[in-house]
Length: 326
View 1 (cartoon, one colour):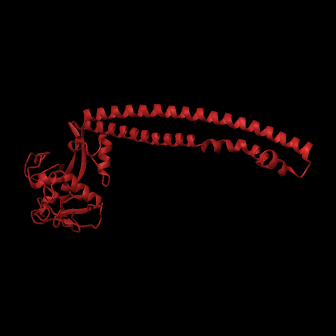
View 2 (cartoon, rainbow, N blue to C red):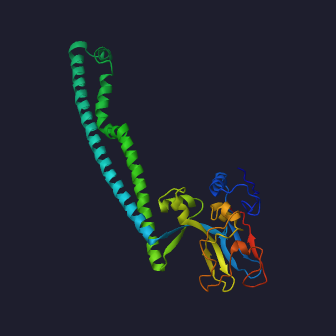
View 3 (cartoon, rainbow, N blue to C red):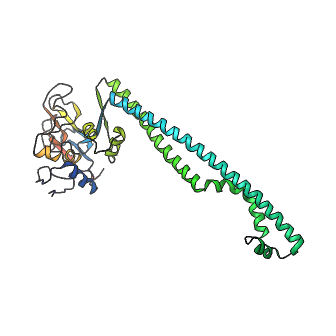
């Protein structure tokens, strides 16, 4: 399949261009693989200064309700409990293994004392002074008495380093650090979701949309939802909120208008997919209606670029390129 695309300084693709591929997942994968970054531009009237948030016309979000938050928190708390149980087991294994190594070291230390005593007897009764090395070469084939004495003198100091560097101990310590990291992340997410649940209850709404910062919005959504981006729940719970304004009461708000075709970044995220945008009717997510006055005369910031300012009716809404890429 082919994707006919024109890249511009402030755009990733022009939705009016000919597109020969309608699989949004494939397109998104291709564009993300090319490390294409959205521009952080400004949007305002060239006459009265009416402005909109900087960026690329909106943001990627995850939408959750209280039932989902409750279930997700319960699942995470169960996972944290499992992590804690595994960490206790690892601590016990490390302790038992350390004790075993210490016993072996003590045994080695006792045997080393015996070797030194035997060497002293050899030195005293059989060889005399000055031929220590030859005695050890013949009897032990290892080291001189002085080297053995130094090893014995430092063995207590070496015990700690020796145990820490033991392969199995090192493996368990690394595993413990990894599990602790995962547990801390889960605990942090539980707190975040708990705070989100409180915000949702205070708002009185049925659901809340959590902005996912760029870059890393996909990973952020996967972390909140607990599923990969290929899971059906991911598509169901995510979307793209556009910055919008009511042309009658001038109320600014955010909404997921899937019929918005002029914002190429909405297509980049796949809300709607290329197939829905160009071949069929996009799924309706949010109704084009002002949440304040109820008017249906609403537009997104991208739909107003180059158009008459709704406030002063004299100026034009401009997109000002900053040269900054997100």
